Structure formats: structure tokens, C-alpha cells
Image 1 (cartoon, one colour):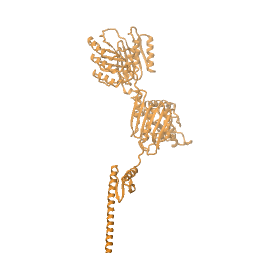
Image 2: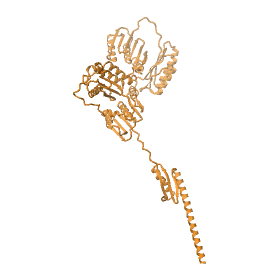
Image 3: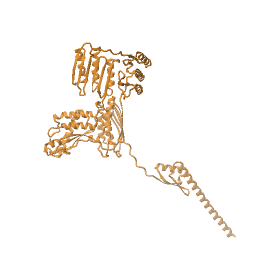
Length: 632
């Protein structure tokens, strides 16, 4: 009995133990499952889908690859927020960090009357000393503020070319902001006049580096025109403007719309200018042109607030009164109208007075016709010499009595008008003044019209037939770089640049040749040119190379003395290399001793030497042997 009772107790105790172990295992499994599920949901909710959660008893194991160390730490913290942090086992890894991208190299350059300032980041390979020297030279005594930082990263292939171009642009522009990086150069500048703006735009368009985008915006102040003038003519030859001036784009649109309805079909050169007498300028001009159209012809001149209408000969009085009356009542309040209906001309056998002046393309001036007296004749000659300078002026005038009133004023105004042309002629008659010719100034017709209105009055009858010729324009007619080199080659082929025997001194006979080359280069604008020196094969090679370098340098110095901008020029001596003739003959050796001009074509290779480095470098020299024979 005692044994059975003890056995029963043992069995109960064992069963209780097994039940306890089972219950514990079940509890752990439930806790593990719920912990894993809770942590997994939290990580997904917070954007850590890349993490995997495993359970090991009461422990929560995190596995996966975190993008960064910071993200890994935040994922562990999120898991610790759901279960005890001591239960979280960190098996997370961190992805390898990407290669750090190099920064963008860029400079902002500002130049004004206060000096030059630079701010930005440049490669460590940039020659800071050469850059500072170049900027100091450009600043021309004004302060230079250098806030550039340096980073030691690979230099982009086009960085040096872009930087060099931006510095050349800075040298041209006194008031500018230039933004430069390896891919693009942005130039914003202010010019003193529209003509200078065009010249700068042409210069900046040259030598743009390959692979670098260029954006140029140059603003110019509007010209001040007084009197503010527009003159429109409608006759048998069609509709045309002698002068067209406006104060706003809207005014130009109003004027050209009215002119188009009157039959004007050409390209109008309407100038935006300051000096308009009223904000209703465009409205007044458009209404005046419409009146001319309604008359079927005539001339309308608006100078400041004075409007002068000259109807065609033969216009009916009733038509004239009707149209003039409507115009007078519709013009804006500030404008005053004067209208004239010419009388029919009467036939006469009397010889009419006439005065003519011509200007040839070569610059010769011939003046013929009648003047009232000897004093006026002297005034006309002196005035012509003042307007045309030291040109060939031939006087063929004669004195005559009975000339119309104001004849002398008309003659002097005609000569002044002729001086606005490159070539042409003026004819002064009793009732009309005619100007014909060619010009390189797009606004020459307008300038002549304003001049004659000022000198002769708004009712003056004059006819302007002036043709704009691009080749005569000193700005638009700038030759291309290739044309410049061709012109220089033509000069040096005809007359060589020569030196004293065995030296780099230019001979007296070659000075006119250098003068002519300097004139060509001044007209060509900003160019990158290589001046190359060559010798014959007599003498030692090392001596010949040094002599050729000295001679190339001498030509560059001579051009600089003639005020040619040579900052983008390079001189180099090739010695006896690249002969163009046989060195065994005197004629061949003479041909091989030469100076050549060529364009520098930029190369876009990564190893290209910086132009700044070239500027800082001294010309290559060799130790000459004093005992070597001199090369002539």
C-alpha cells in the first residue's frame, strides 16, 4: 500500500512536470511568433522592407543589407521599440558606399568699375599664379577679390578651354558677369552703344571652345534721338521710310501695321530710342501714315510733336480738306499738324540752278554747281574738307546771282548728308534735294532724314535713296579669321618681313609691311594666332632655333607697339624645320628665312596644356654657341 501511494505521487509529479514543460514551450512559441510578427510589421510600416526578422526563442534576429549605417541603426531602434532591446540580435550588414562624385568646378566672375571678383571652385591642377597674374592684368590697376576654393579631383577635359575663353571674354568686357564651368560659359555684359554691342557679339562668337556651350547676352542703352523723327513717303516708286523711330515695341507694331496697309512691303529698320515727346507717339505716327494712304500718296514727317503732311500734286481740294481735317481732329492732344497742298508746276524756259557733290568709293570728292558768292564758295570748300578729312577734293563751283533763298544752307546740308555715305551723290535744286548712294550704316537714311529736317525744316522736299551694303559696315563687315590670315599671307607673299643679318632686328624696309599687317589685325578683332619663325639650314641647328624664336618674338613686339591686341597670340621658332625650298641654293635659303601667321585651332584633349600655363611660361631658349656662324 505504501509503495502504491508513493508510485502514484511520482507519476503525478512527473505528469505535472511534463505539463509545465509543454506549457512553457507553448508560451515561448507564442511569444516568439508574436514578437517576430510585431517587429516585422513595424519595420515594414517604417520603410525597412529590406530587413528580415527571425525568431530564436525569446530572441529576435534582424538580417538584411541596410543602405547606410544610419538606416541600419534606425531599423534596430524600431525593433527595440516593439520588444526588449536586449532580445534584438543585430545580424544586419551595410551596403558598400558609392564612390563619392567629384564636385562641379565652376567660377562666377564679376567685373565693374570697382574691380574684378571671383568666387567658386577650381581643380587643384589649375595654375593659381598664372590665373592671378592674368586677372590682375585684366583688372588694369583695380582691386581683385579672389574667393576661389581648390578641390583635388580629376579635371574635366573641357575645363581649361572654358576657363581660357572666359578670361578672354572678361578682357573684352569692362562691365560683365561671366559664369563658367566645364560644359558652358554664360556671359552677361553691358556695352556703351548698339554698335559696340554688335562688335562684342561678333568677337565673342569667335574661337568658342569645342564641347562648351556659349550663351551671350549683351545689353546696350537706347540712343537718344532729337528731334524724334519718322518720315514716310508714298509715291509712284512705292511706300518707304526715310526714317523710322519709336519708343516702344508696341509703337513699332502700330507704325508698321499702318505702313503695311499703305503698301509698305520691305524690312523696316525702326530704331528703339529715347526722346519720344509723348507716350502716344506710335498712335500719332500710325494715324499720319493712314492719312497719306487715304490721300493716295504724299509725304508725312513727324518731328517731335510737329506733324507735316505734304499731299501729292494734283490732289483735289475737297479731298485734301476732308482727310487733313480728320487727321487733325484724331491726332493725340500734344501733336500739331501742318498740311500743304502743292500747286501744279508752271512751265518755264529759264535754266534752273543746280548744285552737285559726289563721293567716289576711293574717297575722291567732286563739288560742282552754283554758289552765291566767293565767300560762300570758300565756306563750302572748308566745310567739305572738315567733313571728309584729308581726301582728294575737287572744286568746280561758280558764282551766280539770283539763287533761291536759303541756297547756301541747302548746299551745306547736302554736303553734310553726303558725308554720311561711303559713296554716292547729292543734287540740290530750287525745289528739291536728292541723296543717293551706298553706306555701311543701317541707320544712315534715318540720320540723313533727321539732319535735313533739322537744317531745312519739315516742309523741305528731299528724296533719299540709300542702300545698306554689309561689306561697307565696319562691324558686320569684319572678315572671318580665315580671311584675315589670307590677307596677311597675301601681304607677306608680296613683301617679306626681313631682319638685319644674323639678328632679330626688323629692317627699315620691312616696317611698312608690319604696319599693313597691323592694320589687318586691328580690323579682324579677337583672334588666336601663331607667329612662326623659320631659318635656312646654315649654321648650327641650336643657333637657328634660337634665332627663329627671337625673330618671331620681335614681330610680336612690333605688332604690340602698333597697338594690336596680342594677348591671344603665340610666337614660336622652328629653326630650320619645314623648309619650303632647297637650302642648297641662295634663292631657296632666302625663301626658307620667313615669318608665317596661322590660326591656333583649339584641341579638346585632356592633356592639352592650359593657355594660362603657356602665358606664364617663358619662350623656349637654347644656349647658343658664340662660335657658330650667324644665320642671315
